[in-house]
Length: 248
Image 1 (cartoon, rainbow, N blue to C red):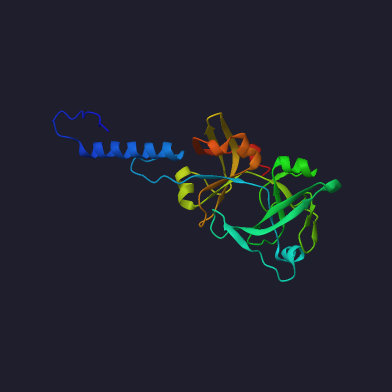
Image 2: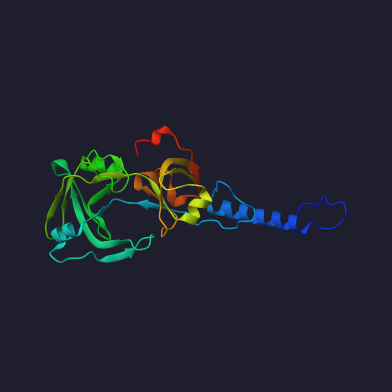
């Protein structure tokens, strides 16, 4: 690349100015390539987070007790595939979800490790298929939500609550949260560009954890809406707080 001509009339090259311009150009180029959008970028800071956007398909989280009821006494979940976040995995085990009037979805994947409360996470089209009016909730917020019946090879479990449409969110660590200028519990927006469309999702909850990798989770309906598989760019931005978030 060619640096702009110096305005130094002494004829000497302003080396520090050239270095600053080069650093800025490199940072801008990396930002375009990764879809990064820092809130306060510094020309001397070349760090650009690796932003990953994942489609979170329908899945289930189970308690230890429910694992045994569904798959047999003493049974533990069998890790089959590691997820992007360290320590989490897709299990080999699957169950059938049964909704009202015996509507059902078979072979729904169980994710591990186990939790203190069982939870079913579905997309909007899944809830229509099952006939369940599931609200949009953040993971773990299941009080007052509808239930369903889970059927496994060794038995069945009736959940009195726990069926939700998972709210979109971003897992983030302290370094990346500083880069984007966000704090735990705040909200960001995600812009996805693909050859056929450009979609901006708002109200992604920031979930800060020291061990997290930067990753956005959207459901299958949202992934299809923005044609994520063919995305040409992704951009994450801090979202200004407003009163509409008081209910979260």
